[in-house]
Length: 205
Image (cartoon, rainbow, N blue to C red):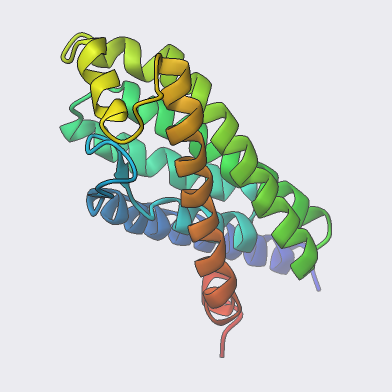
């Protein structure tokens, strides 16, 4: 294979990677719009969505950089109608990176199902832990400009009366919620990845 042929092949791969990453970013944006509350389990202002799923698929199929790019794309687009002044999107991006980066790196090191599972689980744990701090230091300081802290805590206390402060709320509610949210994306990814991987990588026939 000549150097020119190899260069052309590399360019095709790069163009495809960019295109597929963009499409997954668009899909993640749509899934982010389709968020929904989970009554009785978490306060109504905290929504559930599956927008990390395309990012995880990208991280496995094309590497962690593509996964991070998907997280970036969906949050940049979501900024156009942000109701949080951008802090919600910033927090979502940080958490998304915490999720897909370990998953993508561990899987890239050795592409086995075991490594994929370990990476995804590690990412879900990291995302859940970081969510406590991103909410405490980034999200809720801005939210309190629109909703008093007493009202925020009341929403948590309506579900669990033992919540006495924001740390309690974030540790008892947001952290497990974020972990389960990550695990849902992991489960779906494991169910569909084998089928969609050839399409994402361009190796399907």
